[in-house]
Amino acid sequence: MKLDPETIRKLAKLTLETKPDEITCDDWVHRVGEYVEATERGEELEERLRVVEAHTVQCTHCAEELEALREILGE
Image 1 (tube, helix red, strand yellow):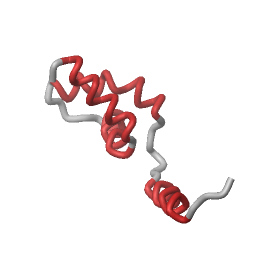
Image 2: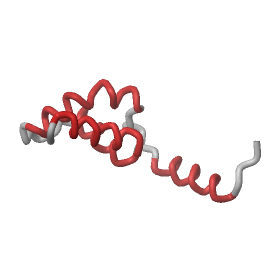
Image 3: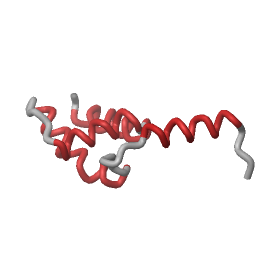
């Protein structure tokens, strides 16, 4: 499989933006409910939930899932 220069550029950018404390989409799914509850209550987020927020910024799929979840919950 050949990658075009634009795809290589995007992959390199994503690689450089990766941080050691990032979570996967699977981890995100397991924590997003707790994240939504904490944000609804206006709580200061602890580290284990701040990474949920950070992942949502980086992952468009999970961002869409969060938006759908909030719509279902009526937020």
